[in-house]
Amino acid sequence: MSAAKRAPRIVAELGRPETPSETTSRLAENSRKYRSHKTVNNLVLSLLATLGMVFVLVLIVPRSEAPLNRAVDFAAVAEQVQIGIDEPLLVPELPADWTANSAQWRAGGTDKIPSWNIGLLTPANEYIGLTQALGANPSWLANELNDTAASGTVTIAGVTWDVHRNPEPEKDRGNFESALVTAAGDSTYLLVGTADDDELAALAEVLAEQISMNDTEGQ
Image (cartoon, rainbow, N blue to C red):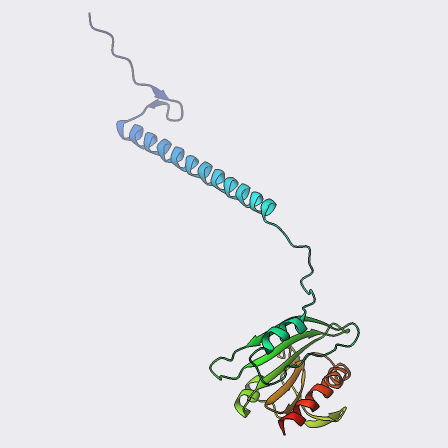
């Protein structure tokens, strides 16, 4: 006696047995949902693992407690740079509450104009870049000052400076609001920054003796 053939399963949603094509479609849809769910789970696990690695790196990477605007010993840098350079480099005795946040010797790019550069922060928290360029030409100077012409001159402690004002809209001026320019010996000196005239003059007065000595030696 052969076993009785089982009646097809009635699907509640349909109220009748599935057709072969409906069964195939249902199985395919269930497989798709399973794969999709598994992919989402994998993405979540991967994201959690990545966040965990980042957290660990944050914990183990050492962090300096030094302020970002830490003072730079530009005199020590100048002493090292001065070796092999005949032209005396400016090493200003800064007024009270002034600090330097950068000091570097630039060998010169395509213009071949080497320069000594000190970045200064004033008591009013403004910036002045002091540049001493060796053998500078008019093209180099025009590039440094965005082709602005001198608007006048000012004499400070016996040194005469050309005064430049940035004519661009305030939002486009960057670190160049005003500038003072003078030359002595083989050097061209630039004070370019956001400081007001009083702070520019204060720095120019500090530099006057060294600039005048270079002018005398160059004659």
